[in-house]
Image (tube, rainbow, N blue to C red):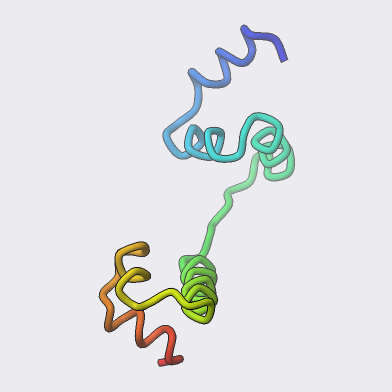
Length: 87
């Protein structure tokens, strides 16, 4: 891709596309665009929540405490405790 095309691409992205571009890098962003070209994509919140819960449980099982997990993920200690105890 030429510098001119790259400049055009960056100037014509909305905030969400810019976030994806910055997060994924050029090559992966281009693959994503080609794959979903012309379609709307919806990411269910429950998928992200479930993945985050699994990550919290994993970190807790490796010795991380409720207080640090709460601080790290922006939840209360009681909510972290509920997640880790399967409630």
